[in-house]
Amino acid sequence: MQIGYIGTGNIGEPMAANILAAGFQLIVYDIAEGNAQRLLEQGAQWGNSPAEVAAKCDIICSCLPGPIEMESVALGPLGILEGIREGSVYIDQTTNSPELVQRVHGLLKERGAEMLDAPVSGGREGALVRDLLVVVGGEEAVFQKCRPLLEAIGERVYHAGGIGAGCICKITHNTAVFCTDMAMAECWTLAVKAGVAPEVIVDVFRNAALGRMSNLNMRLPDTYFRGDFDPRFALKIARKDLGLASEMARAHNVPMRIAQLCEQEYMEAMGRGWEGRDSSIVLTLQEERAGVQVRL
Image 1 (spheres, helix red, strand yellow):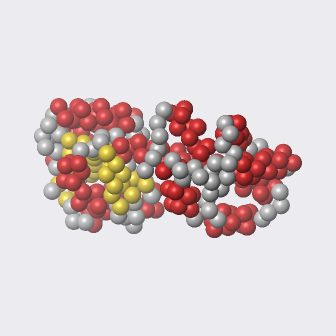
Image 2 (cartoon, rainbow, N blue to C red):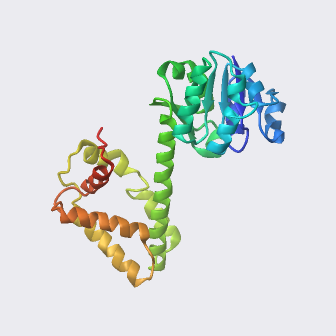
Image 3 (tube, helix red, strand yellow):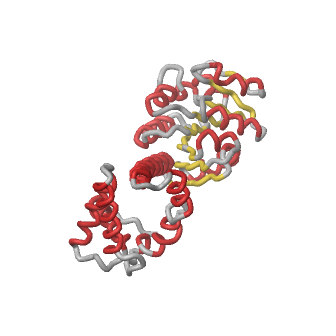
C-alpha cells in the first residue's frame, strides 16, 4: 500500500516517520522541501505537488496549520482533488473546520474517493514516540480500512462518528484545555500574591482533585452525566468557596475574570433554590442555553 503525507512540519514530520517505521511505502510533500529531508533520508520518496502525491497513493494524509492551508492543498491548483484516484482515501489530520472537512468530503465522494478527519492530541512530544490519541471522523468501513495506518501514527485510535466528528472533538477538547489554563493562572496568581510559594501551589494542584482528574473520572459520572443531583458536594458549599476566593482576590487586588463568571453562574443556580443539590447541577444552566443535555 502506497501512502502519501502532505505537510511535514512540527507534528506532521514525526507522524510521517511513524508511518515509515511501520513499514509503509511513503511519498511526501511540503511547501518547504527541507522539512521533509529527514524523511527522504529514511527512505521516503518526494512528490512534486499534492496532486502528484494523490495520483500515486492509496491513502493520502495531510497535517497543515489550519483551514486555509488545507483548503488550498485539497482544492487548489495541483491539489489533492485534482489528482486523487477512485477508491483512494484522504485523511486530513489538521485541526480543521468541520464544515470545510464535510465540504471536501462531498467533493471527493463525487470523484469516487473517501475521506476521514483524524486530528491528534499529544503534540510533537507525543508524535515523536507515537504516544498520540487519533480521533477519527468518517464512515465505519473507511475507518476500518485505514485503521492499521492510523495505529502506526498513534497508540490510541478512537472512532468518534461521522465525517467532521474528529475535528469537533479536537476543537472542543482544546478549548477546554485553554479555558482551564486561564482559570488555573487566575488561581495561581491569587495564591502567590496571598503568600503561598509558586512551587507549593502548583504541587497542591497536581495532587488534589484537579490534577488527579477525579471530577471527570469519578464525581461527574456519578452526578451530572447521570442527571443525579443528590448532594455529594452541595451547591451552597461550592458557592461559599467561590465567595471566599472573590474576597481574597479583592483584598490582594488580583483580577479574576473567569472566576467572576463562574460565581455568577453559581449565584443564578442558588436563586433557583438549588442550594441543597449537588454543585454539579450548575452545569445544567449551560445545557438550558445550548438546548442539549450531556448524559452517559
